[in-house]
Image (cartoon, rainbow, N blue to C red; front, top):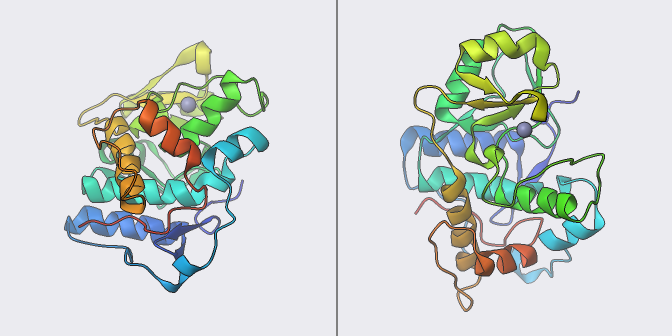
Length: 256
Ligand SMILES: [Zn+2]
């Protein structure tokens, strides 16, 4: 399967970023815990009308969440700004191969555990940390029975284990179960055979942070339509996420 590190590109603050650059952004914010900012001031790009789909349009018209990847990259970078060190890279772990829409990041403790479990042989992971935008799309499909071959079960936005940053989906679960369990991952079992959650030492939970990241990005781009940045998934947040641009906000993540 293709690695995604050379694949999707995102729009952060009007700049096209590769997945590797997203990772670099997150790691830099993580290591330094600093005021690292994507260009957040208005740029020439702001003058160009955006014909992008909204998150809700992606949910209603497509059977791939690839279109929300640029917004997802912004959300992950904003999470890293909100709490430096909370996310860590997994795409440099020997043997790890990520699905095309899988973020190269996990909760830092889960990433450490995955690194300990990996032995260099191929470990394909097709789902990792999900953002609010991705979960919105998957949940819409589940609720409306769209794209059943892609999504059989999906929690509402803000509720998925994958949004916590602790979950991975491993198609070759039988081969990896013992090693992953030994490193602190719990296998979900028959309900969802590919799914593992990290439950070991230092496990965090990104879900509220992930919602807050969206609320902050929304407010940065809509000073006249501000919502509360409380980190809870509510009706006001849902309405804005539905209208959010899948290819990312004009004003991207900032650590200031
Ligand atoms: Zn899963």
